[in-house]
Amino acid sequence: MLTSLVRCGVAAALVLSAAVAGRAQERLAAGALPAADRPFGTLREQAALQQAWLKQRLDTVLPALMRKHGIDFWVVPMREYNEDPIFGSITAPETFAARRRTIYVFFDRCAAAGTPASTSCVERIALGGTSQGGLFDARTSAKRVANPVNGRQAELWGDEQWLLLKEVVEERKPKVIGIDRSTTFAFSDGLSSGELQGMSEALGKTWTAKFRDAERLPLELIASRLPEEEIFFEKMTALVWQMTATMFSDQVVVPGTTRSSDLVWWWRQRTNDQGLGTWFQPSIEVQRRGATPKELGADPIIMPGDVLHCDVGITVARLNTDTQHLAYVLRPGESDAPAGLTQALAHANAMQDFAMEEIRPGRTGNEILAAVLSRMKARGIGGTVYTHPIGMHGHGAGPLIGLWDYQDGVVGRGEAKVIPSMWFSIELQATTPVAEWGGQPVQMAQEEDMIVGSDGKTRWARQRQERLFLVRGAR
Image (cartoon, rainbow, N blue to C red; front, side):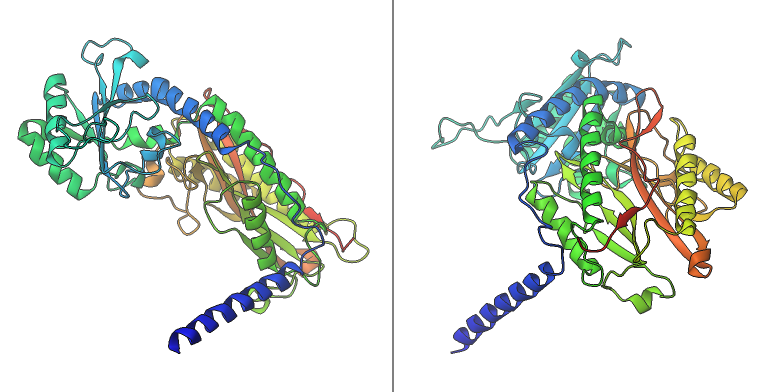
């Protein structure tokens, strides 16, 4: 009897949920979710690109970074489901987790001789796991298997892995053994306490004395991007712009009917339909003349005269975007936003200019933040700067340029330096009193992805928003 009641309750909940979702769909414009194609090809096609990028990064970027940071032997041990943050930057797209335990070893055999860093200098060894498409020398166990499956050899397991690591170390006699440990950068702190203990006990004092926190090596490897990835990233940001322009239009919004949450789920559904992912829940915020955020509530109905703000992103081939754009819902008889709102957006654009001009290789995030805030003060622009790297992670590896609640610099993470071939999300907001709104302050929060080229020059991945998107009444 109880089981039947539970089943009936679950069924009723599912019916109710479907009905609620159906009603929400009715608040969007007709045809708001058309059939979608695959703008970046099939998963298999994406994987082929990723594998080519991985090989190029390991062949060209890694050797130079090891030499730059004075680490001739880098060891990265990890266990299944407790992967080091560097994992996605050194493994093939078909690899979703470490295999039991995997110990990745990188050895610069040319460092002692002082010859130039090159692909042929760096050995890549996987003690456990696969060769990652032939990019690592994958070692297996010497243990005999009683009933081998398809002739497979036993996998490395337990203490055998540590003993083999010790052999690898003793054969190569490194001067510095880099480990991923940091109190500052999460991306450089992937070595778990258990793995450190096991590795230390196996290697002994002679070799553990050569341990050095790699810190900047994994940080910069994760942050470094290739020219081929830049081209792909530009296509990603172009799609984000296209999707945002559609979302902030009468193709989706019905003023007086559509709620902000409807646009959130439109984005999620549209992203999914195109075979894309996202690394965070999108958000839609509304500003309205004469209304406080509390008065608007958590899920307001979008009305004529509203300023709309979105924070959205997509994930493709382990790369991420992060964008914030703004729109204005036209009132009857209006053909453009009020001049005060246009000026408010121009203040945010000026802040973007400052950031783009101040971001240069060799400068720390805190130095850039101070320079931007100084220029804002000189122009009389009020606002905050909270720019971050992006790429393999949404909030990526590299220097933070402010946090929304830390405008006097960020200890530790703000002291990292910009390097060539990295990407940032220029994230900030300008607060401007708007005359047409009776002097009410309006926030123009902007976020746009940009590229620091290999030559150190900055450019937008696509462009930055200089005009508000305009939402008209229903067609």
